[in-house]
Length: 280
Image (cartoon, rainbow, N blue to C red; front, side):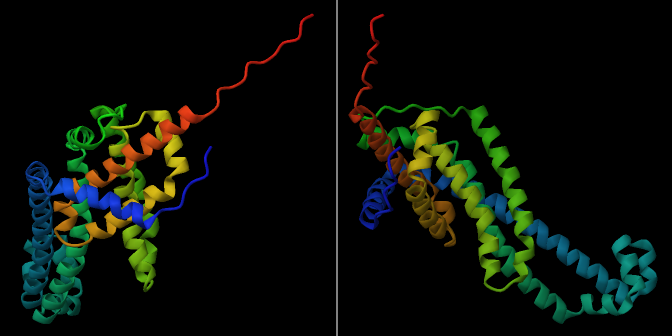
């Protein structure tokens, strides 16, 4: 096994420059609108539903605070509010609604950005074979693609990673209340899912299973550096959705170059000497 080379700033810059030149073409700019449109519709529909439910709860509290007898015709939330009239009055006040609404949209908006990024990663996964094939045709026709990811395998892998993400997310919840650590705690599970889905998706279109195992062992820090930069870019509103095609382009260039290095290194390895058996 070869020792891993440290991430190189110049090499990373060249990688991003190549991907950027590809991205600003009619074909890839057009393709980038698909995850954007689908993700924005889903994200805003979810946020609208969540905010509607939240304000319905506050309106019920306001009604109960003004007319406690109306609680009998309301749901369990109203019954709870009837038992605690002071709490119902606070929840139904304009000031509380204004503060709670602002916090909801700020915090909810932050989560909406993170969730929309993951949704966009999942959506762009179905376009990855086309993007990788186009990059190969433009820049790496001499490098063979050993695609190993079928739709069924990709969906199974995605479900497994979503399960690990939820577990990671639950474990990190207690750290949300610790200043500074909460920033890391909020982003760590989302980066994990972002990194896993993107790298497996792109690598599976270029490398076979054995090559992937070797590469993710020997070049894990180079790959992690690239995905960390991409993740930080994805936190910029709209970039995380519109830039998914660009992210795949960056990783496609990286994995094609890594595949070339890996295969050339194999060719340069000296052939094993035949064993000399002694005559009886």
